[in-house]
Image 1: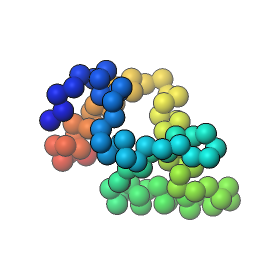
Image 2: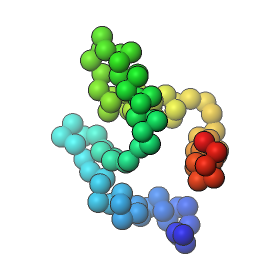
Image 3: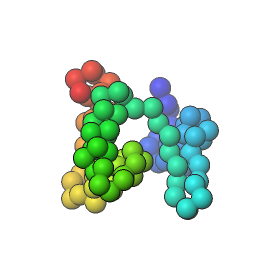
Image 4: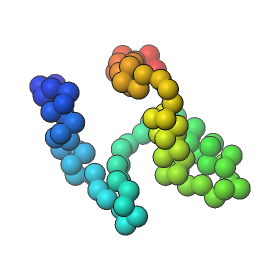
Length: 91
């Protein structure tokens, strides 16, 4: 269990994130994370549906994150609920 406070965790990423957090040539941050096969399947379906745009998985994931962040919802609450449900195996 991580004993750092929330703000400390934001300032100091975990070892995994430190190893895989980089910057691409176009000035964007690169974050690599393993994802459940079910989610990959859903993303692949979106890639297929956006075939006319030639959208990649990365573009789809960025669009999903953009839509989430720009929505008017309570992001912290939603993220916390997802993490808890995932850990409990109810998601």
